[in-house]
Amino acid sequence: MSHLSEHVVVGLSGGVDSAVAAALLLEQGYEVTGLFMKNWEDDDDDEYCAAAVDLSDAESVCSILGIELRTINFSYEYWERVFTQFLDQYESGYTPNPDILCNREIKFKEFLEYAKTLGADHIATGHYVGVRQNGNKTLLLRGRDAAKDQSYFLYALNQTALKQSLFPLFAWSKAEVREKARRLGLSVYDKKDSTGICFIGERRFKDFLRNYIDSNKGQIRDLDETVVGEHDGLVFYTLGQRQGLGIGGAGEPWYVVRKDMACNVLYVTQGHEHPALFSSWLHANELNWISGSTPSVPITCTAKTRYRQADQDCTIESIANGRTLVRFGQPQRAVTPGQSVVFYDGDTCLGGGTIVTCEALVQTGDNTLFHNAKEKLSPKHEARKDY
Image (tube, rainbow, N blue to C red; front, side, top):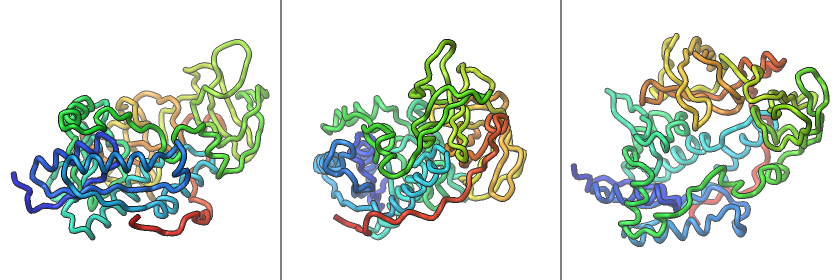
């Protein structure tokens, strides 16, 4: 099929995935424009957020492919709609996933709106997912390469975004993408994949958070209320964490099971398989259903409570007032408030929500529900667009 009359703007990150996505669209006959988005201002001149290097790589890709590259600065929007929520959630004791919010608010909203001003019919990214029309609905599909599938990070997208988005890497593996880039002569063919959160980079997570969040040392206690150590600040720990606790003594390793934010106490227990780490159910809110409609319950499906997790059988038992109860066939380890639970029917992503509490927390004495963000922080950056 010829797409000569269709214009697509591809989000180019400077990495190999988006570069090959652009190349594939050109081969399919689309008119292609590249767009480099800068979403973070701080540390432009140090090793942690190498935006200049990524931009240079994107420019090299566009030069070889023979397409135009535009640049846009969304750092103000990112600060206001992603980073402030990230801080609010950490201060409240949760472990957020800013990539999911970034996809919803920046990559498939701000990017889409800007692409329309350029006359685009579609936007495209290098995500390993796919879309398929089912009547008047657009389905979000897992990437064919199970090791690279990124549907977990895109469950919060709506029909408007999905209907106008292309995902050329749907059926590709990472090895095939790198080989394609090598054959095209793209220098990014062997570029290391980015990991973690871009605005933190290679820094120690504690060092980064200390720049934005006040924290106080406090007691580490076991479930019998015996003091077994001292923590550096509750914001630096997450459920199921083993490393960095600094607890000596004999016996099995220690793991985080709860954070008492009111009393500034970190609760731990010994043993990777301790019952206090497992939950047979969870509650989630901030639900998004890909179809745009709330489904009827009960729903038997599968779910993930973290990105790399294998699918887990579950039943969505209730949906009311934007909140759902999910019960698992087998207890799940280290279900973490602030992270996302994402639902699947085979290879189709149904949607998901933010985990707010789970059985393990209730059984260890914490029934805190995720609450609305506090008063927003003052923005550090003035709004800036093209640069």
